[in-house]
Image 1 (cartoon, rainbow, N blue to C red):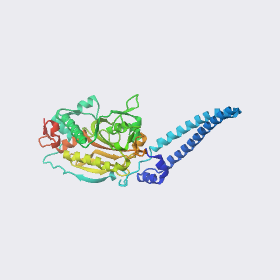
Image 2 (cartoon, rainbow, N blue to C red):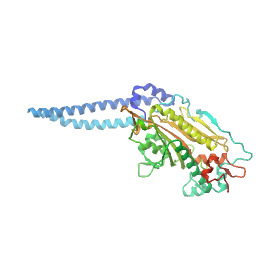
Image 3 (tube, rainbow, N blue to C red):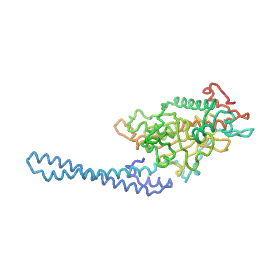
Image 4 (cartoon, rainbow, N blue to C red):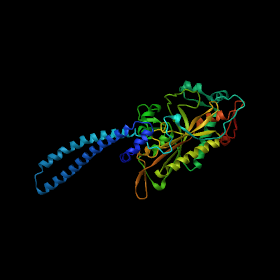
Length: 423
């Protein structure tokens, strides 16, 4: 969530930011109104507590001097009930304030392009040559089913739509992609994390816009737990309530995990194959850093993902989210989209975000300077690689006339020397 103190001091900046996102600026007035109500109650509560302490002190003094304390005792007896009732009111109003703060968008970076929705997103650059085929191009489902290396019908019977069985060399390719990406991130100096596959509601809310995404999450029945849609959630929650001394910053992590998403909504699971699924493998990058350094690390994370795409030899483009498409908890976000020859268009495979202090504030994740000053850390995340969608890109871009799949050169050592996936 945003900093209420900053909102009080710079309301106009938040009004302009909210309007730029195409949202109702009345939310700023509403939040500040609740905040003022809360501060007035808190002030009364503090005064009552102070009065209670003063009366207690006076009672002790009067008793020592032999004075009459009956009136003082009567006042002292009335105060606890007043404090209790006011305390309950303060708690209720503060709860409303905290919930409303989630509705105030994070301040966006000045480079975020203005637009209404994803149709206004801006292509920042294109990299790689679009492959040319001297034969009819097949989609990845047709190729893998002909080769007998995936089974969508069996998974539909056991688990429903949106799942799959990987078999033989395709399962080996999935493992090769994970191992290649993990080795790449380790060489970059990031620390490896295998996170829990479930997180509680507090962490899920801190990530951002829980109400909008809760229906896409798998909830564990009878428990306050959700299956993670990405390792980002679990890595974020790992430092909840912690203060990191400045000398140890930045903390750079990469985490491999299974990920789970219901993928419900306008798109649904409407395409057989690996592109949109309920379960998939993903390696995620995550950085906790000092606020002054976050935009430098934003570029570093982007560079890491571009290097991975180039090593795999896949054509891609970088698309920046406009103001209307940018999620409320993000200050800036860019996607890397890979080219799919079967569709003759690009599809998202990597998503980069700088959430500045929005996520860390909610979980009280702070840094500590040499002078003893505490501040909220910035958090950044970026996909390193999601195997399911990258496999689609490899299968379709590296398909051969005879129906086989050529292995990207960088993956051959991870495929036990295999250069082609055939029957």
